[in-house]
Amino acid sequence: MTRALVLGGTADASLLAAEIARAGIDAVYSYGGRTRAPANQPLPTRIGGFGGVSGLADYVRREGITHVVDATHPFAAGMSRNAVEACAETGTPLIALERAPWTKIPGDNWIEVADVNAAVAALPDAPANIFLAIGRQHIAPFAAKPQHAYTLRFVDPPEAPRPFAADVIVSRGPFTLEGELEMMRARGITRIVARNSGGDGARAKIDAARMLALPVIVISRPELPERQRVESVAEIMAWLGHRTCLGA
Ligand code: 3Y8
Ligand code: NAP
Image 1 (tube, protein in one colour):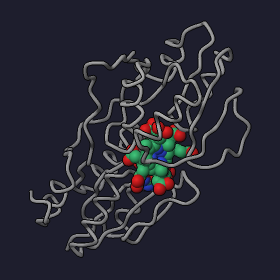
Image 2 (cartoon, rainbow, N blue to C red):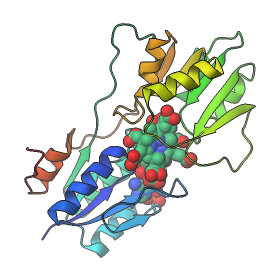
Image 3 (tube, protein in one colour):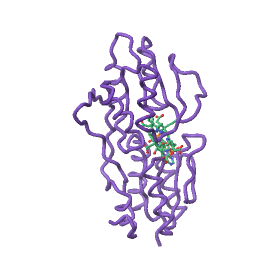
Image 4 (cartoon, helix red, strand yellow):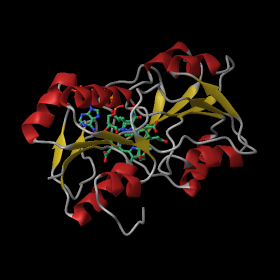
């Protein structure tokens, strides 16, 4: 009897949860507990870490989980690595729902870098107006270049002071092209820093940057261990042994 654990936290994971609920598959949806009020899911939901690899392995055994779907964000590398190890340890089938990275198209002006520190190094020395669209957790390294005017965007209102002067927009996505164009024009943004997250929920800023001919420093995805991965909800449902109206 199938009992799936969905490691969620993305728009794709929400779409998958809806299909799983519709199919009547026994499953649990899991959030890491990063935001104050995560979106409700149509599945029984748990919030918070498992306690490393051993905590996840214990959870899988205790809850009788038969399948694990890693539908976390491409930059949630810690969770993905733990899932590979815990599923190997418990002999539990694992699959990842992983959206393709964005790819450059004519008109894009991208400076592709490996990580946040390389993104800081790629900023100009002359003061600029920077939209840091990488959330809250990994902005500290930008304190090395305080000469810029920074706009940040958080899901929840900031609790701690920022490590550098910055204006904070509080907004959870998904974001629209019109909204991004209006914000960038109103704030006179001259450069954007973004992760290559893929998917549609954060793509609008990339398209707006192209339309405004703004350079984008694009942080490449972290390396993840080998595991089976697909790009569509339908493929996950087929892997769980269910056909969906999405076709598969
Ligand atoms: C807690 C769940 C849905 C899911 C929506 C997607 C789209 C909007 C785009 C920008 C980039 C960023 C950030 C972002 C996007 C979707 C998706 C996506 C980027 C929620 C959510 C959780 C999180 C955690 C949060 C991180 C932060 C990253 C903001 C819910 C809304 C920047 C990633 O304050 C914090 O600690 C926030 C942490 C991880 C990255 C960071 O380091 O700060 N996501 N985002 C999940 C959990 O607890 O397990 O609250 O409902 C989910 C979504 N965020 O159902 O529609 O699918 O990608 N999320 C990035 O891409 O760089 C915003 O502003 O342009
Ligand atoms: P991370 O750095 O990869 O994971 C750090 C720790 O957080 C994990 O080891 C685990 O703790 C816990 N955790 C992460 N995701 C979890 C989940 N879905 N369920 C239970 N525990 C989880 O994680 P992150 O990058 O901060 O991402 C956290 C969540 O936000 C994920 O659900 C992810 O899908 C979502 N998200 C992240 C981004 C991003 O840019 N990183 C963007 C959009 C959404 P233990 O070791 O204690 O088990």
